[in-house]
Length: 319
Image (tube, rainbow, N blue to C red; front, side):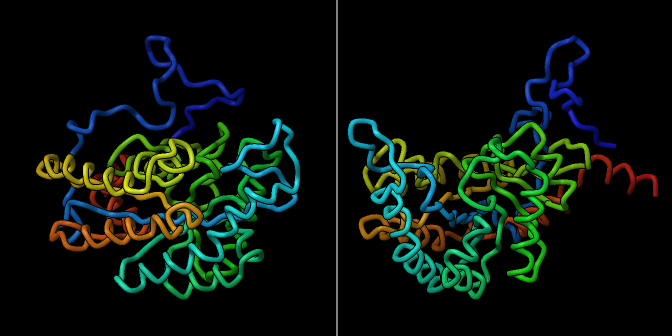
């Protein structure tokens, strides 16, 4: 039986010693102490391509900016920053879709459900390409700002299922921002995994009121939003980080496989001076015999088989 680590007043559980748990959702464990998992198809480097496809509403302040307001006077509409994002939807997405299709690699899209209405050509193209759809809110707005989070999450899941014809199994909150209740709501709504908790290079089990939920590895290091929009590195930086990460992972493969997620945004990696580096990253990974590309649900299914939650293992033992 999994109980929530959060009480009805939003307070964390206390340990036997009286101290708040270090992590209220995921018990602490060093990666070197984790049970070995059999690599999928014998390939220890698991690559998860996550393309964040978002609806930045024209009538709202922009969630991120490339140009700051003159004299600090914020205005709506914010044409330069809105256009920066929309360029990705018009020009960046075709480049990414073509690149992945040409190389036959599977991908996931963490998608604002509002994209289905705002950018129908893009939504249809991703569906036709066979990408997995991961819930990413309705619009690009923090979940912490929502008055009725449960209703919003359900509306997102319903809209994506109606569009794709399939249950939405994964979730990535806008900006990775959660409320104290988000994991409980997601699990109760039937979501299998969430990408907000970037705590490990392998999936881990989270505690929720409704049962165990998978914390899927995501990435704030090999992520174009961090690299280019926040840290403002030169275009080759993402390729360099990917290469250096693989070199480090190679030394750890005997211990366990590694999931390398790549967070991508069409207005960042899809611009002309960066798309070539994404091509190089994909081509370098495809050339490796120890690498497999998987969607979020494929990784979740592999993890469930290799490391079922404690409650499932106990039930199987009793049977």
